Amino acid sequence: RQEVLQVNSQQNRNWTENQIDALTSFTYNTGGGNLRRLTQSDRSDQQIADTMLQYENAGGRPLAGLTRRRRAERELFMTGYN
Image 1 (cartoon, rainbow, N blue to C red):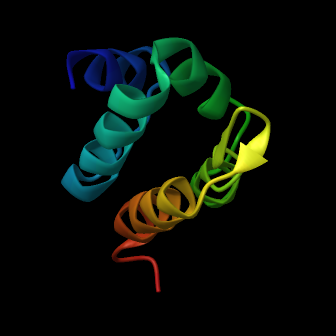
Image 2: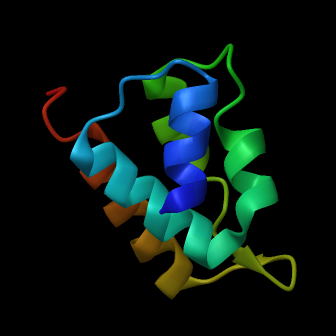
């Protein structure tokens, strides 16, 4: 969570609590390096949410559990946008 809050501050983002929670889950499962790649400062929130779905592979193959997790994180991240 602290790493997500740091990125939020460094990139002058105004993420909601749901977005912070979704990114915290994402970071816990994929690592801080992926958080920074995911949230490059030129990406919109929509692009961040869509890119989350690309992190569904283990051993080079998509796993159903990871697909479900990324979809749930994306949905939480986008809560309030729809």
